[in-house]
Length: 156
Image 1 (cartoon, rainbow, N blue to C red):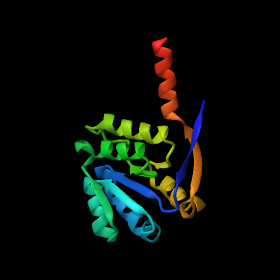
Image 2: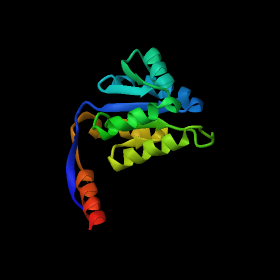
Image 3: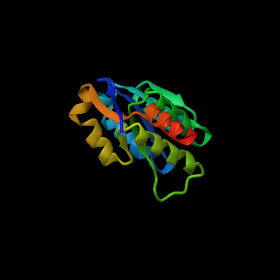
Image 4: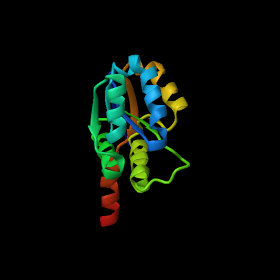
């Protein structure tokens, strides 16, 4: 496999998402961690992003609600290198009508090897890591080269 180095800058671009049953938990967490979050660029899906902005006073770039394409908007920005980290507090006990979009978002976050927290304990470990205050360089699989190699093997 071939790899390329990806740099996550000192100022992180963090996506914040929570399912309805988990929004209060994420809001409390964001308020407790406001001092750290204010040093980074935040974005979020519809209601979650709006609530965080209102409750913390921090600027949040707001996308569509998850079921209306917000998860896909965030996934596209991960692909474009415009989101470095995903804090997605999801409700594993509640069925979601847009479950395929959620799975696609988590898959793309894994493909692009960005930090992902699906619960508050992991979110705490991530934002209290030394890497939150410095540039972080890590290798990821070269997806462009991988696709070219697949195309060549199909055309043979």
